[in-house]
Length: 402
Image (cartoon, rainbow, N blue to C red; front, side):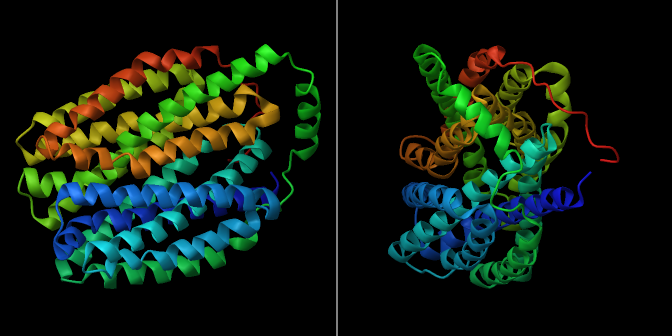
């Protein structure tokens, strides 16, 4: 095992965890920020559109910069920017300045998200076996850490700005310290990719169109799955606080429970996918998530709501990595572009889609708005057959000692 490759994998884990922690820190402070700015759930839902819009714009910018400059330059730079931008949503006292803060924070988060996933693809290619789920697991670890810190700071009476500034400062240090371990700009498998690209130029046009259509189906599924994940990020704590009457310190653990089971599921997903297939992971995962959010929707008890959020996280945990992996295997010569397409539309769902839940609160109670998530999980489970046509993954044996 190449020591530099192992170090690059560890560094990738660090950046995924950092991104999850930064986003999670915003999530657990949503109730306090909403109360201080004095806005309704519906208004918050509209503001979350700007968070998603900023993320989408950041993805477009970071994608091009990463292709030109390399992930080794872009990943740490965007890690620093996202850490600095974290404090901004904690400062406003009116909706307009909060809107601007969320737009900037979303932009920086989108930049970090795309660049670290691009680096993860290079690491996965170099390893020669699936490792993407493990990276996404560390993103969830960051969410758990953010929930724990958020609960502690809420109990201690710290303002959102103080807690977010402290976390942002730590994030800057982490982003700068980890840069040296990242892979160089030139992918390890560059020669193989060049050969595959040359072969793909002679592929029949109908085959290319078929692959493109399949990629967009995967992208739509990613949007639905990640919209569900984003709903948990943005509304789980508010659900316990406003619907079930839990105190803020307890409500923060709703997101922590969801993130914890997401972590457990993603740590297991690579091995389960190798044994049962990616289609089974997507289908049964989406069905499990649907059961979990149904419990959240109808239950009047806090303990049952925690169980529902736990099932929701466990079910969703393996879905996104399977979709990303399927996109990467659909056409090895265009793996990066295909994964970016699926990831881009998916993250639009995660960051902007939850605004739909806010809009639905104009019509129904917050927990009843979660019926939309049940429907999305059901559609995903039914459509999981799209992964049946995945080619068998022939990978190198796992490196010894790892």
